Length: 352
Image (tube, rainbow, N blue to C red; front, side, top):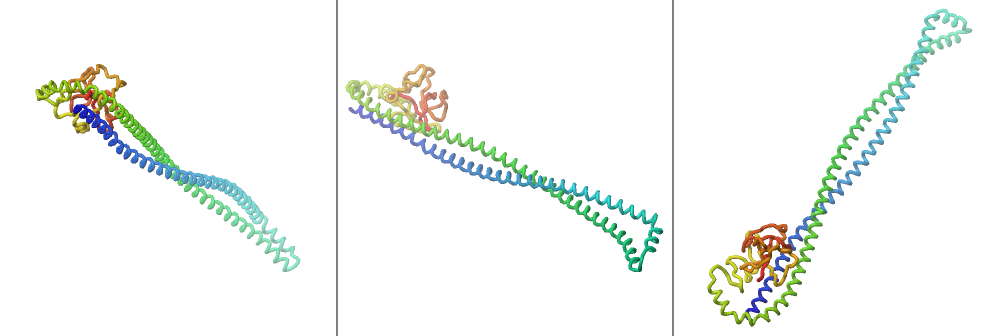
């Protein structure tokens, strides 16, 4: 009965260790998930802000292009008006030259004839004023046409200067838009990366929770089975107690545990969990978890009670290393065949 109670205590210790490892890994994942959620939320806010800025820039570019188009149309109109004004100026100038030439060539006779034909002093003065008015009219018309032309040219110069400013503004806005687009692309890439990491972390957490539940369920189910087996074998254990005592008393290199000699200083059934080489160590017994699906070549039980493969590597489970990785344990070199042990922990497969 004493051996039976010890075995139950060992199975209970292993079960508690398994729960402890699984639960200790979950807060780490929870913190990782929270951090990634904060990062993705911040990046999404940044991306929304950048997109809003891009909308505003696009509106400004469209407004500037409309102003440029309107300015171009106004320049075309002014150029047409300027051409008409120049034509009128040239025509008025030619007419004035013709009248002046006529007056110089025929001025004396024509002027004397026109004045002598006057009926009265008032008529004479009117005809003299007429000649003077014709000359002043030509001069005034030409001056007005020159002023109109100069005014149109000034407007055209102002519009062309405005066009240059609008073109510079559009170039600046296009440059800002390109910078925002590059920033948006980089932010989108970062957001996609962190979203993928967040989903991976959530999947890993769900997998660990499921593995912990399955492991606990298997341990609970097999504890009862192992207890029944131990009851049936308790009489055999008692009958062989004398020989076991002699064996224990003769061992100096380690701790006897049933038929196995476990080196001192390493993991033992009574310790259940130790710290070694930067990680914690626990064990899971094939009596509780048979592990038929692990496909271990040359599977056998070593003298220390560990389950080993054909190359004498201890079969271990780890979430920190991929399967097939060789790691150092307190009982010797091991190779990863399974997962679900929790971050920072290594499970040794044993027959304890």
